[in-house]
Image (cartoon, rainbow, N blue to C red; front, side):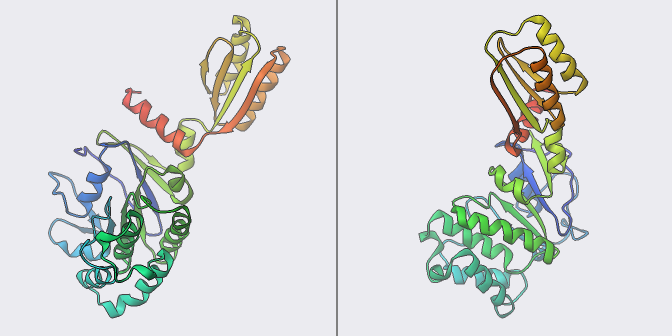
Length: 298
């Protein structure tokens, strides 16, 4: 997917999510930053340096490519760690302390002498993360970092990435279809759709853009025109979204009090609710609504 006018920053101490449907340009963006794809126009800077003149900037970048393609499958875990510590301009002696910490965190202690190609998908992914981080780069690019990882390891990585970004002045750019993972650790979200940036902002701002709460009101009988009209007055005043059916309303809004006002209005009108539910909209729902709206030209 070609990128068109995509521009954003990843600051030190910041974890940014790069989201989009398959084919939206996420991996193209990551590969462009890594110089695996040559761009036709525009500029990419790492630590204030344009990447085009020299590949030296890559010593300050760590990357996990989807499918653990940033490691050598015929080398062992330990050999990969030694190789990449040297490739990034450091030394194994200097990186060994950091590597040992990551090996323990990722549970790779019993995998050190095993060829990566003979490992499970999850363990290959762990080795890829190890090799991307052990030279302590300023920018870390993680393309689907949780693929194949068990729940406990994902939980450990959440804490680890947040701690690293805060304590080591590292910036993280993460692509993932695991939106719960994104919701819990990211400071900001950039959303791509068909190669273009359609959103860049905080998670609360993204949720607010497509409403934060949802109320489902089902009646025992079909709503008449007067009832719908009266309820719409509350909805209109609150700038909410609504989906109407014969005997149900799905109402989306940003202010929790709005939901209570709508419920109170319905009760005063004598509407008997067969089902009433107010729930907070998830990160996944907010993201899907944004991408869907953009693809419809809204």
